[in-house]
Image (cartoon, rainbow over all chains, first blue to last red; front, side, top):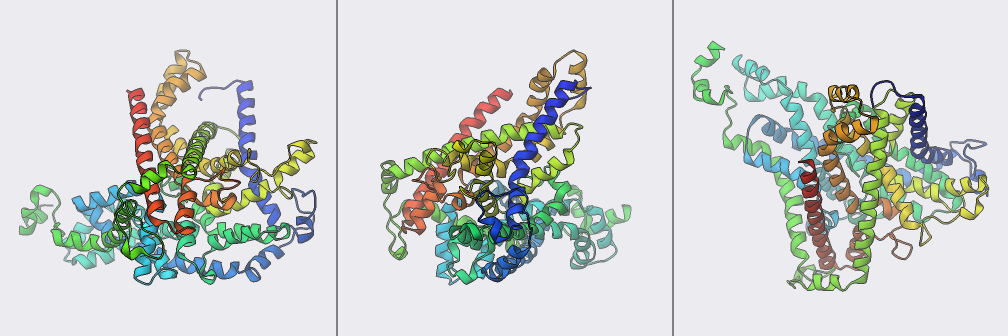
Length: 279
Length: 311
């Protein structure tokens, strides 16, 4: 824990760390290796950890022949729309939550915690019925609406924290100088809020990008499927030879959230965001 | 400040200490909150309430217009439904198994990462990558690892000359559930590790030093200094993990879709099948209600015990 550990306990610690590295790392190495294997090596009786003749043809194949390209485009559209809408909708409310005390605001924040408790199956049936009634079932618009509402509680929580970090005195000073409320928001608050807006947008982008359950239930037309749904369908029709494109597609599907995590690393490791990102 | 205080509109708000023209009139607050609250009410709170109601009806796909209230009929049927009891049992085994294993492993890793060890950076990165992966991708990744012919694990057993241990991990009755539990642990451990690590960094160093000076062993310091200080974090993260795991869907859907023979049929998978394969909306909603009640009840028991221990 502390002080100078003995040689034996150091050795044990390194052994334990090695165990963790193997448990966490090997499946990842296997995914990488499979993604770079040419078809001949994929059907070989005894697969190797390192491909003999690494190739990128799986990546090309994943996004040309296999419908995954279209799914990636669908995911990109849906996630971008969700991110932009979430930020636009959350911004005024988070300002109100941070600057004014109100019961309504407290209730909204409390909903964050509550909404974590409910199994999606309880929400999905009524949501499905509502969307069908208004003609938005099996559309990207319907999916975007769900993703925005789904990301909102946490986005509000996060964004109002960013607003609180902007000193109130700055706003007051500007208003004393004769700026109107709108001017103060536009000239003082928004520029300082930029990092928070980016973080919120990224968070809602990633939660939409990774989401599977709602997309599986709400989208019936294969051409409209998002990437997770397309990948899951692809698993179902796998033959050994198709594992390569599957692995390649999976790696590409992970890229956006990897970038997000790299970007948010410090906030994540402080634990403040840790409760938020759950598939 | 004096010039500010002289302004008449500021004086009225003086007691609130927050001067300015941004006095919090109700209308403004509601206008600002409306764009967020309206969608939440329409697409989250309302569906939730309607979902709870549907659990007391005979709603079915195709005839949702003439839903009739059937009271506890769904729940009586659930009690006699072997498939429900199976999914409930599997769900508990899975949620408890994953939560406990992932907590123990995460605690170990967090303690290691809190030390001055080499390769700590590598471990930190590796510990976060599974978290960044979409659940569906985690499922695919482990399908590749468990693959009966082209999989990492079977090949490993072949290399060490233990061909007898090769098996169809996800397809075999006896190994399917443990196999998916390991995947759940792999996927969920990073988040728990990060939370525990953040908690550990808040544990006072002085206490440790004092205890060390008093001759307390490493184990004693861990048991009597670290663990009590970490208790609130532990309670919070294990409760959340349990709920998340009990409600999980995507990972196991991709790995086994509930098979073989229902051996990995989590409650959410069962409800999904009931609702969207057989169209029994009311029945599936009833199952959702039961799950909420179970989760709340289990949590209440757990939290009360932990709180009593902490006092």
